[in-house]
Image 1 (cartoon, rainbow, N blue to C red):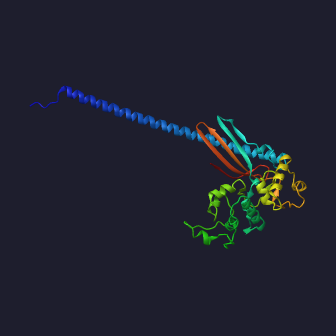
Image 2: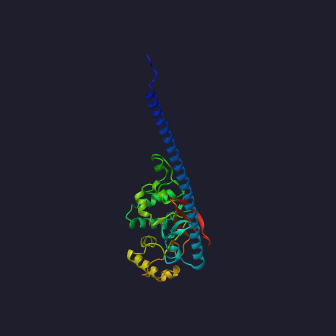
Image 3: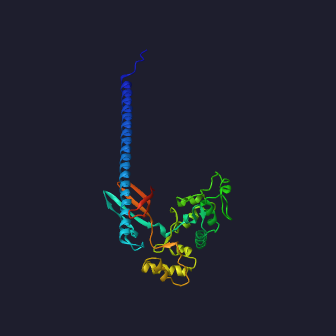
Length: 308
């Protein structure tokens, strides 16, 4: 009996095998091309991101130059100056860049609560008044004071290690200055909804810093100056927007009532700390760069910087 394959069957099998080989080769080639394309896209994205970040870093230097020029030409800081103008995105070096400077002393510095490890009663009263205006619990003030001070004794309505070690997971109170506003989430009574409510009115700066009368809000002003009514605070804001205060003496002379205290040491007409936010784009990459600047001398120093 003849078991040899018929010629037609052999040709069919060979054709199928050839088609399979071609299909496999095509698949492998397509995969290699796809992977090469993905690799090229990743390289391009990394290149674009690096260029976008270089643009953003240049934007920080621009902000420092603007503040340095302001220090040379003006003895006060107010919202009518060039630094306070938001710069929209504009073409630059093959991409786009824009940004804005913000006076951080327009907000009340939470680290004012404690000096040399000790709670300051006047600053604690400021925070209580601010919380009251924002309709937030008064117990947040002593809780934050205990978080910042150097001792381990809990004040009434406050909290120290005995409370925090009972949390899951346990941790200790910081007993030092805040470095970021979001750190408040670790303090008893605070949550992100409360932090967001506070964010327009409070900040976190090193050491003690007064509020700038020429840039702050009526809410912060009424918290810092206890003799002010909400109407008085609004009137002061209108007055300073018309003509910025030159100094504390000018501020006293233009108060709406003679019996209002001027808040010695708690207010000023010049600022030291400014935040800068730079948005840049290059190719397919976008980046946001934030920094805190300290203008203690003419050329501002970087306190911190980060990509967001």
